[in-house]
Image (cartoon, rainbow, N blue to C red; front, side, top):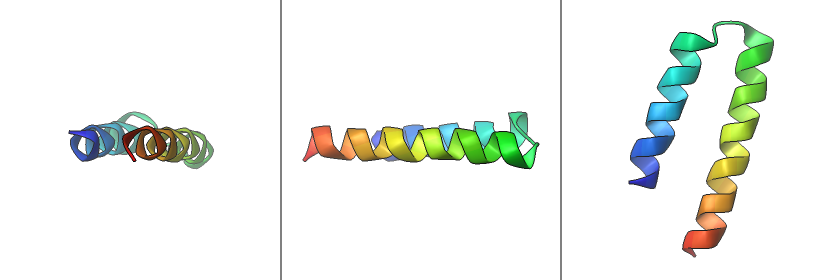
Length: 42
């Protein structure tokens, strides 16, 4: 489920945030969210 949510967020970034700098910021937020989710999971 977490991986599925990650891909949904990633695709939404690619489609709705075409600007490179915005994409970088969103990607950083997603990576931090994934790290937090992984820590909570394991």
